[in-house]
Length: 126
View 1 (cartoon, helix red, strand yellow):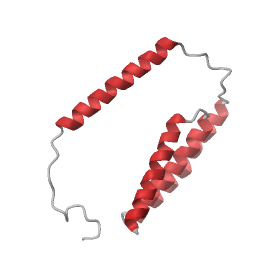
View 2 (cartoon, helix red, strand yellow):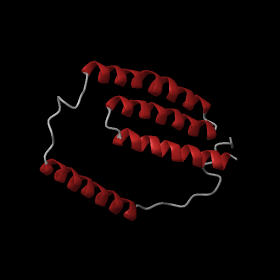
View 3 (cartoon, helix red, strand yellow):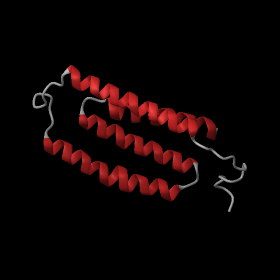
View 4 (cartoon, one colour):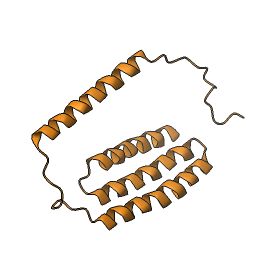
């Protein structure tokens, strides 16, 4: 039961986090980010960390995201004011993203991950 709920929360969290980046409207991005914080709090509850879940909702989803939303609405961003980006800018962004991906993969492949006992990360023990 808990495993299925975890996988559901993980899938929806990743989808919402992806929509934060892919949404064209900045207000929609902030709303997806708020939803991502709520779903992350669901993960904290599954880990039996209710205080961390409450702090995440109050501080991040409650205060900081409302501030972000206020600033975005105050700036009145629209597509008419933004100049069109040329193909050179898009090519530079693709090259920079590809280089970042190569560095991340190389770092993860050479990382020394130690083995731990099964009870090391059990949050129920104490």
